[in-house]
Image 1 (cartoon, helix red, strand yellow):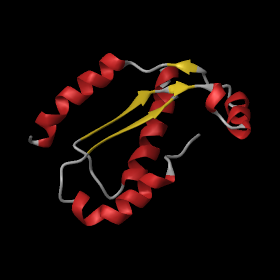
Image 2 (cartoon, rainbow, N blue to C red):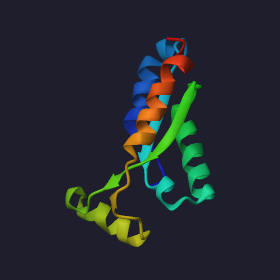
Image 3 (cartoon, rainbow, N blue to C red):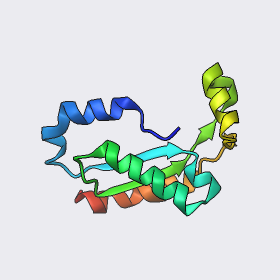
Image 4 (cartoon, rainbow, N blue to C red):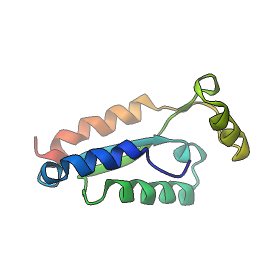
Length: 109
């Protein structure tokens, strides 16, 4: 809903000194890629990059995820309805596998 889970910032803050010296890859999961709206995807990437700062990942992306209403709280269901978010499983396992296979080369492994 327009922000990255707060634990990402805590993790980066805690391990900042180590992480800034290592090649890092990062991905996020959300519904922005589902609609194929370049503006929504660009905005989601800006939010994601801001959450990752000061890290500069060698690879970063956002994958389409899964929205399962049965697992959401009342408030989360309300938000999904309010913004008319898509509901369902939009994960593309082939795209995820392709991205993962490219990582060793990008990370110098």
